[in-house]
Length: 289
Image (cartoon, rainbow, N blue to C red; front, side):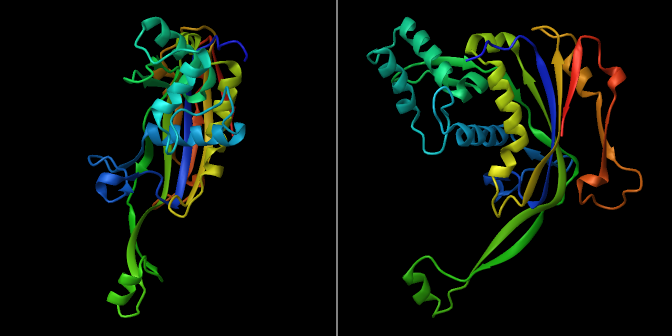
């Protein structure tokens, strides 16, 4: 693997959704997540990390050092047992063993050395890892008004249902979508924490590629059209950074384009302006897309 990263980074990712549900809330009947006080749409950091994990797994076929720790149907104890077997340890609570297995997990699992993980389980304890890459919640630039649709399925699940309905096998359901919304999410990459997990320049480039390509491999009828629109990266000249993160985020302005009236229905309704003069010395601004 390449050397660990030596620079701090912040980034802004803009992505949009059209006629889809970017992140349903299971506690609200799978309605799109929304800030009840402002009406802005939300997408959780967990949702976005899931898409990154799926992309990395697809590209690297889940081979070390790009295995995925948190994945569908994974049993975490079994994942951590791999470290004990690889290092020849018995199941023990010894602190030295836990530290060595933690390093093994960082080395072999991309999402552990990227996002961190709590692996201090009773069986096969591998400790805790603070990941160098963190994301906030994505928030829509404007308010959203979720649309509710009735849908019909021309089939039933069991013969019993068919008999109860007298041969009419139609069943009704509901589907929720956002007609259009542009979302903005802020992210952070810590060089000191990267030194603890082994997060490398190669890992970072893979992460950028994941942000730009993850939606292309996550299509479904529920999510409609989701696309990345712009990735803006701030690279500091030093490990600890050369400017406050918020000052850099404030240099990215997203607003409705002049002449755009009514509800936004495409990315063309918005204008993204980068105040390059507001970016302090010692910070490079990198645009992707």
